[in-house]
Length: 155
Image (cartoon, rainbow, N blue to C red; front, side):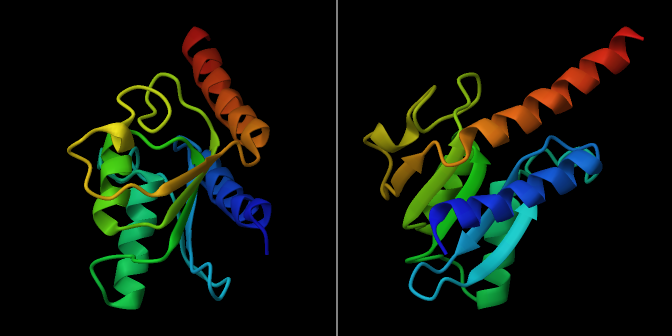
């Protein structure tokens, strides 16, 4: 499979989040050597009443549990939206090899936007970053979600 195929899996997770009235962000952890999808997840912050339950955190926790290890050396993370500071730091701590993300998040992103976490001298592990994978699809789903939220508020 290629990066677009894995991002499509992440987008399916984002669609699940959308249907659950969660911010539609999805993520997968992949072993690039074997092509195996180790784990998949989506945001659970709203209904899980957990501000830390971002898709990236959830998928990395699942991958660690499945593999029975505390780090994710050599594995790749695919996520539909540019990770925030918390998730970028978590991916660094987990020793993710590469991060592929879809849409850029100019307000909350922390890799190419905002604090640019991986460019900071205090960042000990810097994953390789590839952006723009199915970015339009990811952005469209997010825009649809927030448009529906705004429409509900105005009625």
